[in-house]
Length: 146
Image 1 (cartoon, helix red, strand yellow):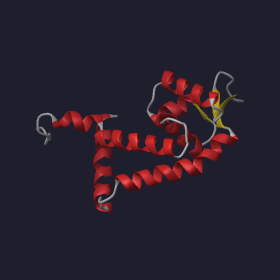
Image 2: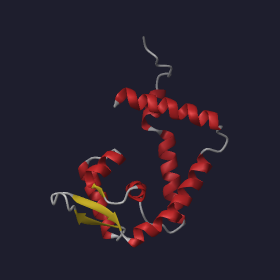
Image 3: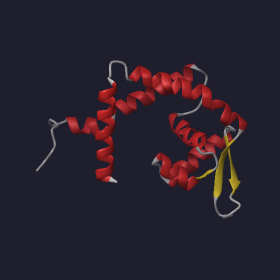
């Protein structure tokens, strides 16, 4: 039995994540207005490194749901602007660990404040109960498809 309660044409909008795209665009705009010259994709990599510095590229792939070529490109660009560097793993020389530079660490407080303000702006008028329901539903969708 189908549980599809969407009218024709609504599903595409749901799948493409209009809300996620709108938040990303606003966050990018807010970064630019505050002279933070990184992309949202680069920020997502930095975000995971702020939580656990010294992750491998594969671990970053898993954490960000990106493929290896995308992570390689993102890390290359972050390395070029001196926010991260690659260090060879002591346990496995074939593996590089991505570590934050002092400049990369310094970016955390300001960018997280902007991200939190952007998220608060996006959730105006949304109750805590609605947020919890949305999180539950999206987690169930993810679990069904992983």
